[in-house]
Length: 483
Image 1 (cartoon, rainbow, N blue to C red):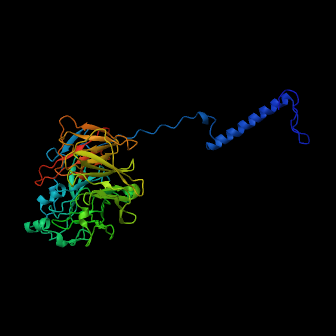
Image 2: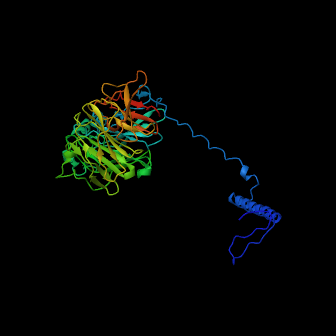
Image 3: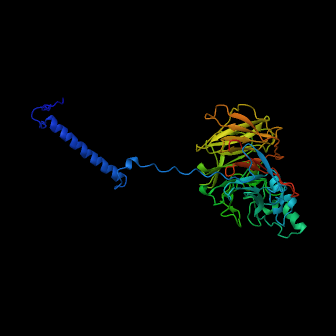
């Protein structure tokens, strides 16, 4: 329809209602009136949306103030600068006491140190206290019957060893030398339940070669307020004792005081437990990795042939499961105890690192799959040469790198490895030297989970061994680059 100052002619066909013809001046008046009405309606709706009754300056009101900046991260005094390494000792005041000072009076301190030293591990609990804690549980075959649980409590100025669970009184609690030696070193076969690998005297899990078997669950993952220590394998238990069992035990740290005690998670056991089973399939060595998104603890073992299928403990069904996916290559020749297994939640990847022909080899498993397969063929941008009994590898969530220690003939650096967007692309490797003159002492056998990154303090707290004499404990602290 064409507009003009003259009367408008309707285009509607004959027989339909026609609009009223108006003059140009009347049209202008009506447009003005309509504009004012629409403006009023729009303004009222705007005011209603803003809470009504606001002043006419709503559109020009000042923006709310920006939130205050996050407070700076206050790290413990003993954590070095990024890329640096330091050591805590009793002599420099960073260790309040020695590891063997926590030996129960009815066990022998010399053998108590084997909880750390003999194919055994320490386990990071990042949920305990303000800075986390490092837990120790081990010993076992040819080492000690001492099943104490100890921890290094990470304080702000210094750190303190503390016995968290007393050992089983196999031959009583007397502090005389005969009782201490009997508890520590008597052949354990007759006083261990072979189904659950527990001491018969009190039902607590027997002292194992803990290797890399044990995981901490946080409060949001079904764990206690200060973390829960879950172990679903207990192998090479007791001095010259039985091999072990696929049995699940857990200790809950509801507070920082205690007392604490292990509990059996389920009466179910795996295929490699009890009479008629093949417990040798579990040893040596063992690895576990907790994957919260699947509610699974993945398990692995060096023994059992050249291939290992994906296996896990399902916390929902309380059963040990053997998956249907592709096997992991299990033919590393550099010692039966070498290797490291850990989860990278940001990529939904389980990583297994071992030493093949003297070089680092990486295999992956996709934990977003219900029935995942192991994948080999990771290509590194350059070779990483390793010590024969390698076991130091972990994920650093803050710089997005895999941290690999125990490099061959190198105590002054580690390797950093970046996971590419496409796993088939080369994984970039970089040497990360410590500060000038800084050196680390690696464990004489595989380190296992002793090498773990603590996001609370942005550092790895690494204790390679315990001094049986109680004078020369060393705890190394490494803060990765980019943290």
